[in-house]
Image (cartoon, rainbow, N blue to C red; front, side, top):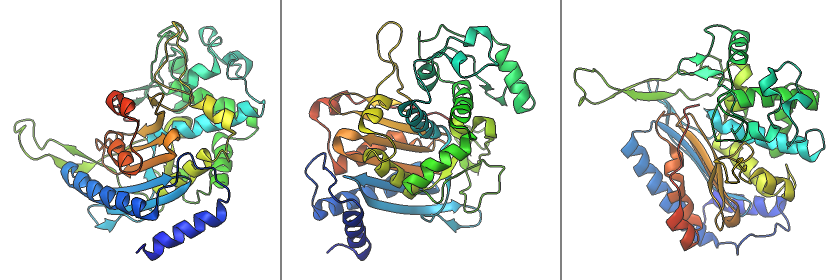
Length: 383
């Protein structure tokens, strides 16, 4: 028999989502329960194998949240349990939300994604002005990165970093190749603010509200955010004893407001699941706008780049897979043709949930045989 919680979710979804056109024949409740049981076992085994302290998972299938779990501990030293309201950082998976924001502005006629940056921003180096807006979204701009291995370049404030990066030469002609960097999203935040008439975070809040995301905010390790999970990483105990058991230690990350468009969101798996429902039902963006947002950006030589507009493209037809990955500890993958999305947020750097989400997705809706054989191995990003 379905649990009381599961019966409530199905009844609630039926009431608020009348007439939802199924992308496939809807699985039976029993099939969902079987997939949920497989997922619970798999996630528990994965947490044990990777020694992941805390984790949230949510699965969206045919417009319904069919699984929502919070496991482990959000703070190891105090034994604080992970709950559905524990906030986890998305880091670079934030870029998918920025992609939706830019697609909304494009659909509203406020931004032309093919326009050069000079149309929207005045204070740019001459070599930057011809870069297209869409090339920022897809990391094909060729611009230098405002971050290095130590954080913001320039060794000082956000303004120092901006001064330093604008003095650097471009690294490639626009559209020549994929080059992941944070400068692209600093510029996108400025365009969003100028063309929407409000700060980036305020404009994004409209997206959060429309999707029903009450726990979503912005911040980093140095902000006092209620209910935020503590981040961890395993480090060698000693360089003299490389075979010793690694030590679990705190992992601190700095995400100043300048970088929020590329990595600033703190949220829950439940909130992201509601956002996924809104995206898949085209409540945030029309069907055509969504399709364009998920189309891989073409390089100058005619080949597809690795990203679409704010979304890594992990697989194409006949089983499109787009997602968001951040901090090597948070990820979500959307399978539009399967009507499926899987969200996994953890507090362990190196958990890389994008590597095991595909196995979870297959429990709910196996892919076509051709795409199973061709499935790529997605790479994560620390930011």
